[in-house]
Image 1 (spheres, rainbow over the protein chains, first blue to last red):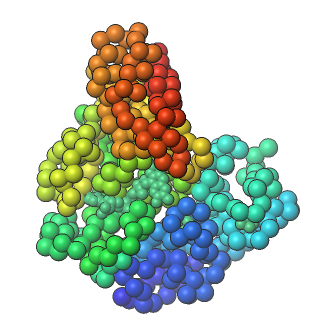
Image 2 (spheres, rainbow over the protein chains, first blue to last red):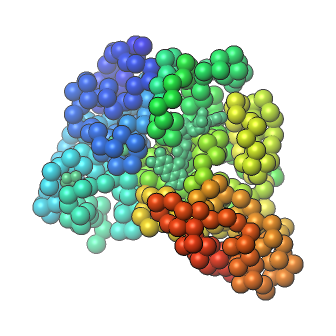
Image 3 (cartoon, chains in turn orange, cyan):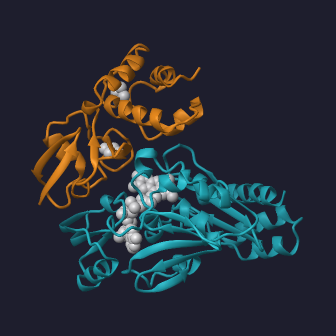
Length: 149
Length: 259
Ligand SMILES: Cc1cc2nc3c(=O)[nH]c(=O)nc-3n(C[C@H](O)[C@H](O)[C@H](O)COP(=O)(O)OP(=O)(O)OC[C@H]3O[C@@H](n4cnc5c(N)ncnc54)[C@H](O)[C@@H]3O)c2cc1C
Ligand code: FES
Ligand code: FES
């Protein structure tokens, strides 16, 4: 079926299978920051923003994405750089596979959390799994970015 | 899940007609659970255009549209005002924010999953379900009866009651299923539900009767839970372990609602 998708403020007219998940469509369109991990909703590496809300693209049907604003880390520009710098300055990234989804979710978290605390940050990021870093370095960087002591 | 055709009706009557006319069709919630199966359907019916995403308060009830996300419920001030943290606590560990932004309450209820924390919590509220074809059905009746298989859940109607209610669970890892879940309310009478045993949540009869007849019998009533319910084994815990945990969670919850 034919759909029009608004990805990072650019409209794509594209053909999809009716039952295709957004994840595969984004990768076919060149958005390789969106990763495939578990494909069952458990790891978070496929996260994108749908109308500003972090959402798992492995579970979200592409057919349903029409009429919504989709943002991947490629669309964050300088906002992404700031979060990446905070994480990298702690030497936290290793393979980097979880990185784009962590950056995107952190960006949404900053907009959503009114009074961030370390507990709230950990809770917000509970759906972002990393298999290399042990989370501590990433959390130090994100804490600083969020202005939490 | 596989399907050939995706439809997005603008009227609920149209959605029900497609569901009834085509036995191979399926209603889509957030597809978080549906996506895990290999089942093949002919038509997938999306409810996104049916205005079922809302939480409203009227004089006697809170109404939650079936297409409302678990994340909306977790953060909603009306829900918090009337039922404290019962529902937020029941959903806040389901994977992560990204999952809960997409999973809907309609799917969580209609799926009648054994490990469902939301079902454990909703059982202790005075709660009814409104379906397009079958009309209004008490929540507990729907959960224990599998007769309704092909209908559209429109909303969940919860009576505003005075009193305390709370949800407690034990899980070993943040985003994993719980080992056991318990909810207790104290409105007109005390209700206790125990879920993730690992089978679907159920209301207690005997322990509830004992604690309602004598509020001081917290330990005795909590110990009755082990006789009243069956507890099974799964990869997370043994039935024997669950038998030890259940009275502890129930007695703590009872102490809190009675304090
Ligand atoms: C990886 C994973 C981990 C999970 N962990 C937990 C956990 O820890 N605790 C917990 O409680 N739950 C857990 N769940 C279950 C989760 O809560 C459900 O998957 C989710 O709530 C289902 O919502 P959905 O909108 O995605 O439903 P869907 O998957 O879209 O639908 C589920 C069922 O409901 C039907 N349906 C949906 N909406 C309606 C409607 N309005 N009317 C009629 N039928 C409808 C569908 O046809 C389908 O049969 C987990 C699920 C997954 C996939
Ligand atoms: S690939 Fe989507 S949650 Fe793991
Ligand atoms: S750095 Fe490798 S998965 Fe996170």
